[in-house]
Length: 143
Image (cartoon, rainbow, N blue to C red; front, top):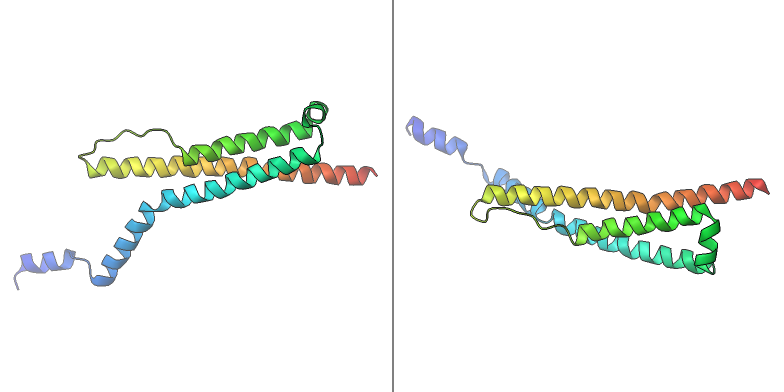
C-alpha cells in the first residue's frame, strides 16, 4: 500500500461515522418540519386560550376597554398567533438552484427564522398567562 492509498483510506469515514453523519443530515433536513408542527400546536393552544378568555369575560368589547390587563392579554395572544403563522408560512427565500451550498444556506436561514418566530410566539403566549396569574394574585391579596 503506497502513501496515496493510505491517505485516501484514512480520509474515508468508517461505517459508524458515516451513520452519524447521515443521521445528522436527516435531522437537520427535518428540523423545519418539527418547528412547523410545534407552531401548529401552539397556534391551536392560542386559539383555544383566546376563545376561552373572551368567552369568560362576557362582552369582550365593553370589558376590554376598561381593563388594561385584558387588552394586553388579547394583544399579546394575537401577536403570538401572527408569529406562529410566520413559522407556518415563511417569506420566500432566494437561492441558486444549481448550487447545493446556496440551497443549504437558504435552508439554514429558513430554519433560523422559523425558530426565532416560534420563540417570539411562545413568549407572547406565556407572558399573558403570567400576567393573568400576577393579576389574580393581586386581586386575592386585596381581599
